[in-house]
Length: 492
Image 1 (cartoon, one colour):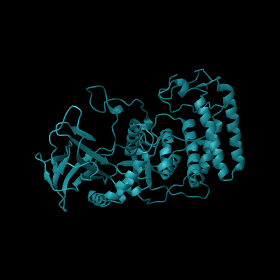
Image 2 (cartoon, one colour; image 1 turned 90 degrees about the vertical axis):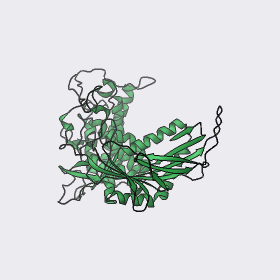
Image 3 (cartoon, helix red, strand yellow; image 1 turned 135 degrees about the vertical axis):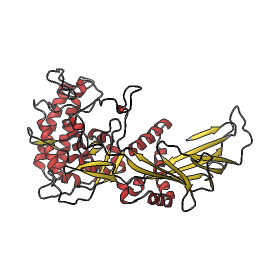
Image 4 (cartoon, one colour; image 1 turned 180 degrees about the horizontal axis):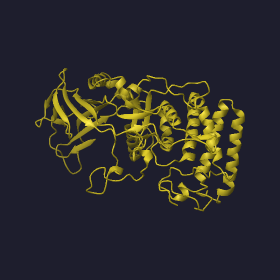
């Protein structure tokens, strides 16, 4: 952030660093920000000549926050420190929680209400949070209002390295969510509490490793700065990256104290203990965690930066698979739940063809991209069942699914979201059958793989013959709305 003073001819700059480096769990989970303030002379303005440049200026850092106990003091090492203690809500509010203007917060009814949205007990109470901000540059004086610090900083040339360095750390030790684990709700704490049990422990490591962490993070930042992008594109890239990271939940679950249930989709004789970690991402607008269709679109981030985080979600999605009696197969749910309780889908209706296809396409891409076939082999029984369901959905041998066709394009018209013979879902279904065939072939189930390939090829032939309109593909090939009900309302 930069500010300019025409009168004095000074430029004020504040940098806030949130370090990130791929696959460095310790660096990325440390709850710390690094702040740098500097004052430089600006280039002389066209219509204004600045007064004589001062040699030094007094800069200040102040904090105000409602319902917060703030203490401005020196820490045991003599550094200037601001300490904040407050309660932090564990359920984020979105604009969907707001009612009409003038109404109290939370008065608006949810646009999509369903008994399935109540997946746990009452909301967790707010958690205790403690923040500390320390100055690595001194000396500092208490601000006259008593809510921060002031520091005398020399006016230096850009690139001189003269700056006011601060470190801002935080710590929450209480559970921030609950996760359905083998039918029971268990508390989930932020993963970093395994490494740092207090805000002071976080602060000690953040200060000690500051230069190393910033060097790594800047190395990654330089890669994006070298891309041939316009400034607006680069800014959007940075904004979306930080926004994504800020919505991730990486938690630990309690150690298993009793025998765990066997994974119903594990290979015969294989007992896979549930992972004692939880990773998910809120979709932002309505608070659903890791919707399969959203993570499908986010997958290039995982595959590029951190494939293991995608593999963790495979196991979590797989545990929400539902048996489908008609096909003898299984289908997948939309999401991993909403706070306060995760681990059970919260979306008010199913989108089984799309989400099942998303899982198979993601699994194949992950396996081929990384060369790691462990996840695919572990979930091979589920892959078979998902493929069986997708084959069954074409009840008319048309190449199009005619069952489970509600999809996730919620801002579209019924022809694209709910039609009997959607081209979008038909192509995705065929591609998912090919993905399942590829994964089965990797495990030497060649006959099953050939059958799925044959089904996919048959579907694509039908789609090409019926959907191509000379210069584009139709949105759907069945214009009739007879028998189509909106799954959110149950009405035609």
